[in-house]
Amino acid sequence: MKLICFDCDSTLSSIEGIDELARLRGPEVFASIQAMTEDAMNGKMPLESVFGRRLEAIRPARSDAEAVGRRYIENAEPSAAPTVALLRGMGWTSVIISGGFRQAIRPLADFLGVGRIEAVDLRFGPDGSYAGYDASYPTTRSGGKAEVIRRLRAQLGPERVVMVGDGASDLETVPVVDLFIGFGGFTAREKVRREAAAFVTSLSAVPGLV
Image 1 (tube, rainbow, N blue to C red):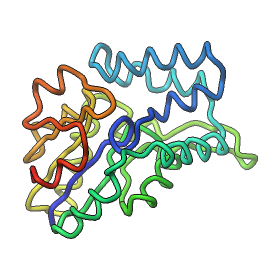
Image 2 (cartoon, helix red, strand yellow; image 1 turned 120 degrees about the vertical axis):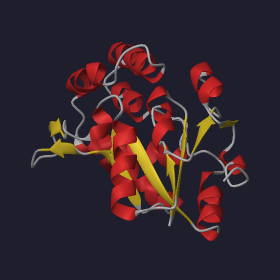
Image 3 (cartoon, rainbow, N blue to C red; image 1 turned 180 degrees about the vertical axis):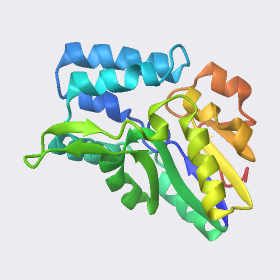
Image 4 (cartoon, rainbow, N blue to C red; image 1 turned 30 degrees about the horizontal axis):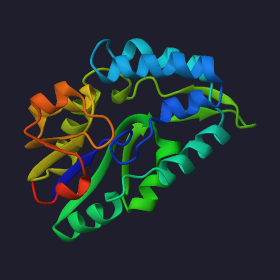
């Protein structure tokens, strides 16, 4: 088995799911959440310092997660689906590793043909209202994506692991993968460009690197 792990937000899709959830709560909440997200993605503050604060400000309902799921598909990276299909033909198993939310990402994963999602579960009450999230999940904190990859290595024993992503949390996987590919098709972060072994602006370039 060979694993290729993709970040979701600003990689497989142009949107940031948490920002889209915030957008549903009006411009003031959106501006506040977007600023926190950007600081975390640029490595200016640890992810765990903003994760719970953002969700408490938004309190997303099940219907909100479903709406963002549709937005992910509408804004999918143009070459994402054919790239995943081509990689599958080359013997690679794709996994999505995200600090976003499993329920919102699932429709995009199905659209792309990706079976496994490693992301944070939202919790909802019987009426669909917000009831919290899985605060113990690794991707709620700094170093979480590297922790997920170590678990995948232990569970699946892949011969090779590649990570593709745009942000500081993705860059943290460098010590535990065989190749890190920085992605700048939507947001080109200088730290990622500088420290990635390879850097692409279209996912269609990934098969040629692996």
